[in-house]
Image (tube, rainbow, N blue to C red):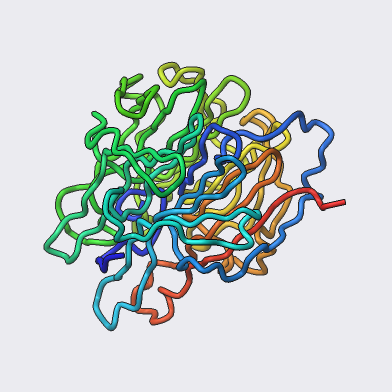
Length: 390
């Protein structure tokens, strides 16, 4: 763990960079179980499995399921800024494992253990075959005279303890807030951003850059650019899930905060799909849910399920499902059994194992760095979202 000046907001988004590891393999957030035409999603219930896990409360973390075990790793923990006019965070490169759906946890790798990836947040993880992969992400500027480090490295492990660096430079620009999935036995990455956002470091050069490129790799070491300029607008913090024979890209952001006066938030609620990462089809320009970053989506009973995220002026209290990415239905107004928008998370992690969805940690901070309790609004809990257990 190291002390850093860090973004206080928006995992998955560069410079504060969601996922999730919403990847393409079962249990990695992207694919669910069988057909769900007869499933009533309004019957799904939220169950808190652990309200105080032993890993530090954090956002921008990731979790994968491999051989029946949950592996949780990385992320950022906001800390008391001690009266300083900027946020302070700790970054992680630790790995924790659970054999019982996230109820009990054991640390198997410390952040300062030599021989593995550097502490980071807003990176990506996927599972391919019998190995897990860590891709990209960011470190943070240590003060206002510095700039953040954005990674383009790829690491692989079969057990979460021994890691192999497959490449220090994958060919795509270093970035955070990217998204990755495993699809047809290849790893794909999408979008993301580089450089710090002006909402966090006002006037700090260089200007934040957004990407709308797509790359793929069969081994994590050698990468092929599928498109340098996808038809969806360049962004960070999107979600990508795998359903049927397509990869679906949903939502995201091109800035953390709305201009004053706020005419239109710099967030997206469009949905695109692709069979190969090169050719893209617009499914809907505007899904039923409000534009947002920091959200998560997963596939359950052959439906895309989306919830959570950062909103203006408050975080959205809703859960939406769609059989095709075009038609959406709201099935809940209280994810995590939330009683108010202050309980809604963004930059949390989510995975689907079969048709059961799990969430881990997440952020509930706002951009009010003068609030002495703002940094405390980050979680280390584990939830399950599924049909009631018989």
